[in-house]
Image 1 (cartoon, rainbow, N blue to C red):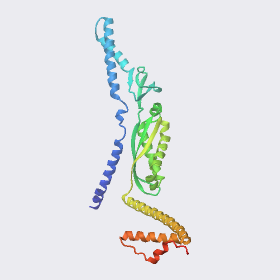
Image 2 (tube, one colour; image 1 turned 180 degrees about the vertical axis):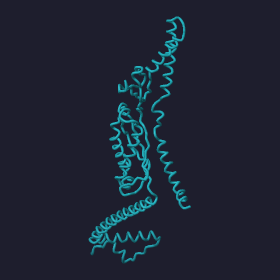
Image 3 (cartoon, one colour; image 1 turned 30 degrees about the vertical axis):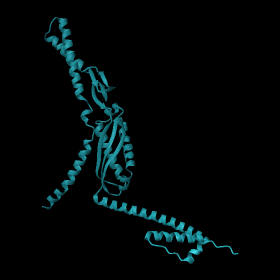
Length: 314
C-alpha cells in the first residue's frame, strides 16, 4: 500500500509540471499558418477551371465541336497551367527546385514554374516567430534545482538557408534554445539567475544566435518568463534577504551616529570657548523639555541676573 501512496503523492507535482509546459508550448506560433495551403489550393483550382474551359472552348472552335479529344486537350492544358502558375502570400518566400537542385526563391505574389521540371517544395514564413521553451529541475552551479520558462522571438532572414540547411527550422530553434538555457543555468548560481535576469536573457540570445545564424535565422530577443525554485530554498533566501536588509540598516545607523558624534564634538569645542553660548543652549534645552511636559519653568533671580548686562561703575 505504501508504494501506491507515494505514487499518488507525486501525481499533483507531475500534473503541475505538465500543465506549465503545456502553457509554454501554447504560446508558440502555430505552424498551420506558416504555409498557407488553402490559398494555394483555391488558386490552383481557379487556374485549373479557367484553363480547362478556355482550352476546351478553343479546341471546340478549331475542330467544330466538343468531343472526347477536345475534353482531353482541355484537361491536359488545365493541368499544365495549374502546375505552372502559383501564388505566394505577402509574408511567404517559396523555394523552387529544378530537377532536384536549388534554383531560386520566389514570392510574394504571382510566380511561374516549368511543369514537370521545376516545383515549389518549401515555403518560409518571414514574419517574427515566437517559440516558448523551458528547463525543468535543472541544477545550477551551486546544485539548486530550478524550473525556468522562457520565450524566444526570431525570424527567417535567408529563406534558402532556412529550408536547405536544416530539416525543420522550427524544431531546430526550439531545441537550440532549450540546450542553451540548460547550459547557462548549469554555469550560474541561483543568485545570479534570479538577480541578473537581463544578463541571462542577453547570454541566451547570443548563444542561440550563434547556433541558428548558419540556418538563415536571426534571434530578435530572449525573455525569461518565470523562475521557480524549491519552497524551502525560497524561505532560506527570504531569511537571507531580511538579514541583509537588517545589516544595511545597522550600517546606516552607525554612520548616522558617527556623524552626530562629530557634530557634538564640534559643538563641545564651541561651548568650551564661549560660556554665553553654552548657557543659551542649556536654556533652550530646558525650555524644550518644559514644552514637551506641559510644565512651568521657574528661574531663580540669581540665575536670571546672569543674563543682564552689567552696568558700568560710576
